[in-house]
Length: 153
Image (cartoon, rainbow, N blue to C red; front, side, top):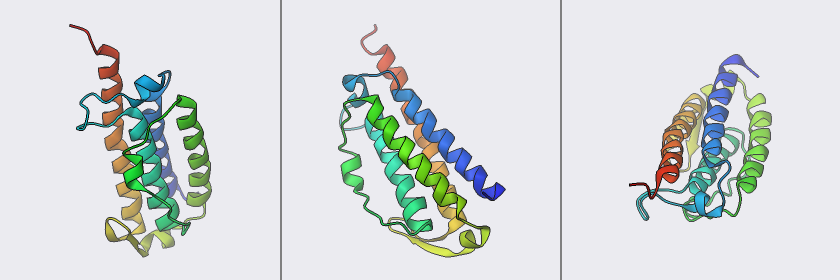
């Protein structure tokens, strides 16, 4: 993989692994808990959403794979176990590595049309994906901290 592309891969995968780590060890109640119902997202939703976002932005937009994303369903997701989140991430991480390994810097100079963000070059798609994933790291880690202290006076 080109070193510049590898850096984006590393940034994105590190962010997702931190989001996933925030959910580790929780049962269904903890995975689906929202600090403020109707205003915040559960750890399940954050994990499902970031997987959908990465799959769409990188694998569909940049790598030309079919786009089957249902963003609304991501925000209604519920999880029964951490293992299902881990399995989903393991599959995406493998697909992501394969897809990004096939990209060249010439590919990233090209213009693409993101279904929600409109026209942008490939570098911008990678940047937006990495930034978005890292924004959700903070949400996930804070949600886990709030889960841990809920009910304390």
